Image (cartoon, rainbow, N blue to C red; front, side):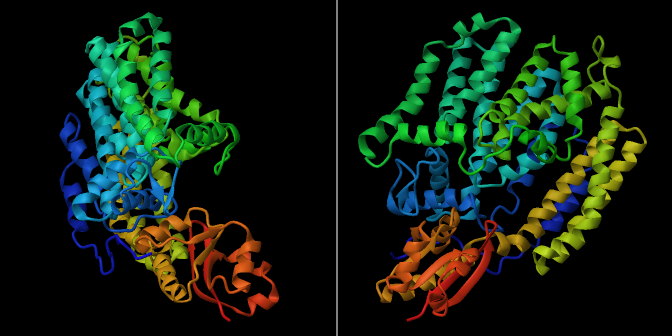
Length: 569
């Protein structure tokens, strides 16, 4: 198979103007309270800067990049194809968006593959600010947007070619329409239509969870309001019909024209079976208690105070909605056997709003009955002081720990360590002086600077470790050699690795086998010359065959030590 669409070549790429951004961030002064446009600009820079500067990283990003590449190259637009075969893992919306962004350039690149996540994440920040303004005023809204933009997990997924930032945006759009209806700010029919259309698009992005999350949050919120009857005025007929139109057109088209794709089989395998039995990520019931502190950095320690304050204010409609929106998502994904940290991304906007309301209460921006005696400033200063200590220690340790991943990381890791340490010290000083707002401001500046240094210098240096580009080029060379003898290149039990190979080779697919006996038989008989496998599989090969094997390339990718071996005659 001749390569048809080759991703961009990053060789020789250097990062030069990054220091300008860091200087601008410092000179900015950061008087951001009440300035939502600056928060949106901050989000755009944090999420978008240097998206083009490093490859799509295994295991997840090449999967979506390859699916979109095959849509463009082979015309497989109705259902996604990866490695030349139909994939039922995910619905097509995210692949469609990547392919559409890539069409003007003729190929899928790191930038175009990540653009849907970037735009969805900026949209989520904008909707969070909009919700915050309705609930607690402009200053609290701006804090909420800044907290969300600088939350570690949200920032990471905003820069990744993965579905979850898009899913988060669509669910938040549905919930924003519902909350506008609930507060009486929008007509029930119009808000209901927006809710169901957004939910339909979310289903096309990631399956039934796109409906179950916003529907569950909306109904549970009305139940706590003791107003379930209001659902009858929330586009009860037109809304579901709009949902069916959005999702049903694709289901009908697939049923009529995609003979090798079954929507119902995909639902059973990737929704029902995954939830009940788990597939690749079986986790204990307490998994998210372990994940949340890391996911919410640097704001993790604000969450207990935010929940305590919201519970004390539970008679308020805003606090009830935010508690339901945050906790429902976490509990929903706690029940299934299959769990991943990124599943809880749709909870982060509500969590950011809860934490912003804590900051506003401590700052007494909106004094109300009982607020002055709910929580003191230590709920913010002690929390951010603890984070400051962690950042300072991490900054001091990073120059010594990072080089273990590669010698090229020493200089960029040292720079990142200095930024983290200086930011931590500044945060600690503000916290020690009992200045909650100043400690929050300095945390935002420190995290923004650290994020820009990371994507400008650390990620490019880490790229050779995370990218499958060089492995793909080695497989391409092996494929050219094997074709002369009419033999395929075999892949033995590689998991997601073939996706990176096919993407960065421009469409060369391994012949995958899962049975080691079959791989050995084909090598021994001359049915294959090259085999890509986990290095741990080699000792099990017969001694006679091992003498004929030569390792032509080795690397570590997706937590596997991979070897490309040649079997000599």
